[in-house]
Image (cartoon, rainbow, N blue to C red; front, top):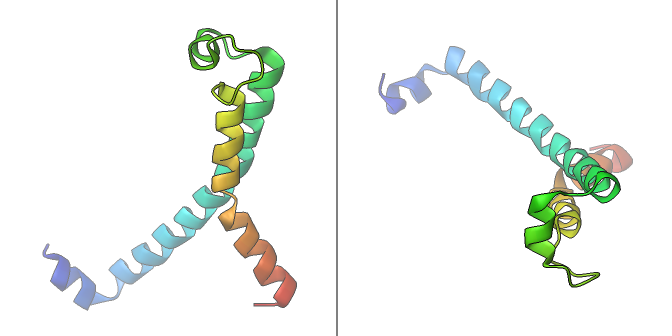
Length: 91
């Protein structure tokens, strides 16, 4: 089916677009706690060989897996900030 015809249909494809949008929102919300959990688990349990390669044994460095997971968690926090903003301002 051509994408122009699919967009003109509006019926089933409209519902699929709404479902895809909802799924994308939930995935966005899931990213921050997932990366935060991975950071905590890596800090507590150790990162194994991957952490050894990334940190190169220089004490407290920014190259390890824990800082990477924390940064990824921070970068994906926009979805949570939007949700909090909407609930706070009633939007």
